[in-house]
Length: 77
Image (tube, rainbow, N blue to C red; front, side):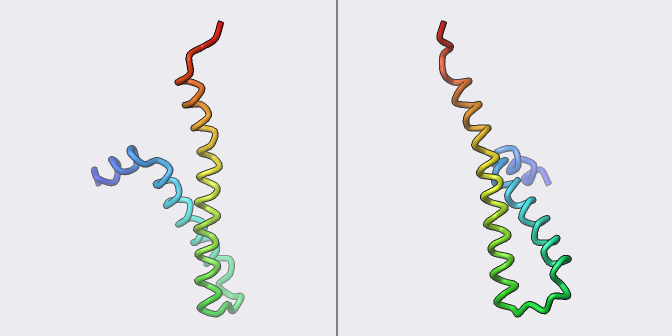
C-alpha cells in the first residue's frame, strides 16, 4: 500500500489518468451494456475513453505547469 501512495505522490498526473480512466470505463460499460456492441466496438470505445481521460488530465495539467513556471520566474519591479 505504501508503494501505491509513493507512486501517487511522485506521479500525480499518471495517477489521475488511471483513476479517471477506470471511472470513465465503468460508466461506459454501465451505460452501454444493453446496446449490443460487438467485441471490436467495445475495444474501440474503451481505448477512446482512456484516451479522452488522458487528454483531460493533460489539459488540466497545463494550469499547474503555468503556475510552476510563474513561480520560478523572478518578479519584475
